[in-house]
Length: 196
Length: 196
DNA sequence: CTGTCCATGTAAGGCGTTACATGATTGT
DNA sequence: ACAATCATGTAACGCCTTACATGGACAG
Image (cartoon, rainbow over all chains, first blue to last red; front, side, top):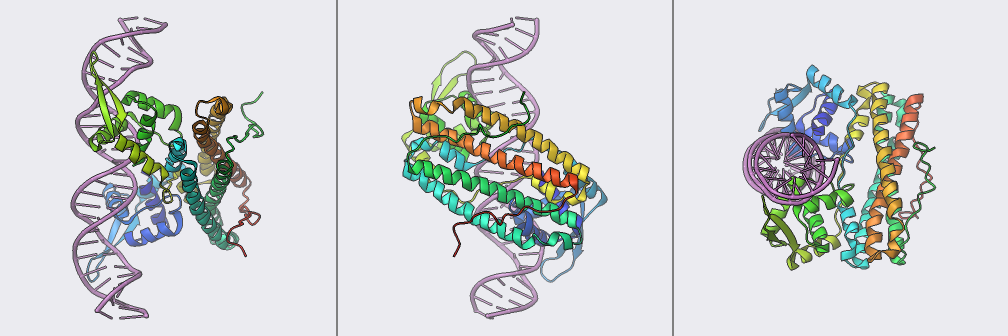
């Protein structure tokens, strides 16, 4: 379970309450690992049970506040998970199902779906670039340049991915608008490996 | 639930058994919508209950064989779903968590993870291209050129996405190997919209 | 005095995976 | 004789989402 390890990751930086963890997720990793509140609380309970975190209870008016700390065995587990290559990750894309079965609906209906996707993708593309540009200069001055660099790489990934998506969407929309059923040619793509 | 609609999609082409549906998934949409056998059977039971499919029982030796047919209300539901724009789809990328928290492990450990990912991605990239090239010429001669074209577009998407991924991985690996913490410059990227 | 922020959780249900179980037919 | 293919399912567990519930503090 990756959510466990994402939480351990944040706690390895500093102790957090469930509430603050939620804010950290939303502020940094939500683009590639969204997490919701109830999930975070449940997972913190599990982590506590497994001995990977401990809770420090701060008495408050109303409900008590619980600050979570990572334990040594938590750090060990996190390290193990981070350094371990994962097998291929399976992705599910409802949009592609819509395209795949697109022959069952009209061109206008397909285009409607594609244009909506393009608009949404364009918006988050701009958003990612804005964040990227806002933090891009902070690497050298950051207390931990390597860590800052690595975390910004995830934004790079998002930007490049969105670029590829927008590219594809534009070309698909154009082909459908003109009734041109021609396919892209990928023969120019160098595949240096597997060649003799 | 998209699996429901993927199944309805296949059944809109022709009746299938659960077993054959599984093979159809594996042969065509597994790259963007993997489905396993028990899930398919459970979902077929649900669809039957909802009146979107009917079963035709064929008596056999051993267990009976059940062929599923889509109903009119199933076609209607499928159409509705296909034509409806979805909101943004959330994606979860364990690899990016590993990179984001990469400051907790060594360069060699990060590189190990990234190289494994690159190798896996390169393999599925080649696989996608091979399928694409095998079917690329069939559009014009296909009984349903539009449908064939649309289904091949999903392969295009996969190929472009993998290209972007491999691109990113190569450049990240190179920067980490040389200890170069510089970021990509995306200022050249045209964003024609949102500009005055 | 209304709403937002801080902070905690429970309940229920849907989606997905893994493992297990059955049993005939066909190919090596 | 053994394995693969055809074909069906159940059980159990894990992950994720949505909705609901509580309650003080503080700002407009």
